[in-house]
Amino acid sequence: GIVGQFELRSEMARFCHRKDLGKTVTVVMPTGETLQRSLIRSWMPDGTAFMPYLLSGVLMMTFFNQGLNTAAEAIAQGAGVLTKVYVRPEVFAISAAISSAVNFALGLVPLTLVLLISGKYPGLLSPLVLVMMASMVMLTTGLGLFFSIAYITFDDFRSLIQILLLALQYMTPVFYPITALGPHTRIVIELNPLTSFIAVFRHVYGGNYPATGLNWLMMISSSVLIFILGLWFFIKKWPKAVAKI
Image: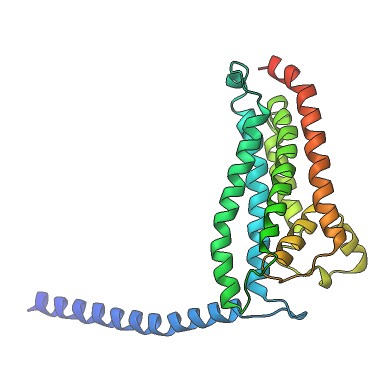
């Protein structure tokens, strides 16, 4: 009857849909896998493996953003409570930055896999990553102490900081080689301390990018300087900031 014909047509339509979907999956899946392999094994014009280069940059920027935000928020959100405990509030910022360092260390696992697939390995210099991590903890702690006061004083400052962090990410060679930039732009990018952080990290963990002595000097000196300035600013402004709560 009419109902039987309708059910037959519905079954045929579902079968054709499954068949077309199966064909689509059969075509798309190998294409996606091929694209994935080609990206992982692709190389930039200067001979640098692209995927380790990209992933190391993303991992470093995540370390920086997470460390800075958690260090600042650890104090800003708990300012009312921190005034009632016998622990210096700076300790909470440092512990928050260290927790971000732990997350960064966990992120080295997928980076190592990508390095191995690309025909590279962490290398004998990989223990020097600890120096870079310690420098980043000092950098994010110093900035976090500074921004925590700003968060308490001006609540809208959070949105401004996120915009600045986004701009800073584009001013850091995360996904593009610094050699592709013009001479004037390159000078500006090289003055960014995070450029030195990423260069050192890529150099010691996988040897995927050369780092100079100037990069090491910029990384360590900027982190120590910002930590000292942030700590000094926080100690000076903390009593006044708490009084406004």
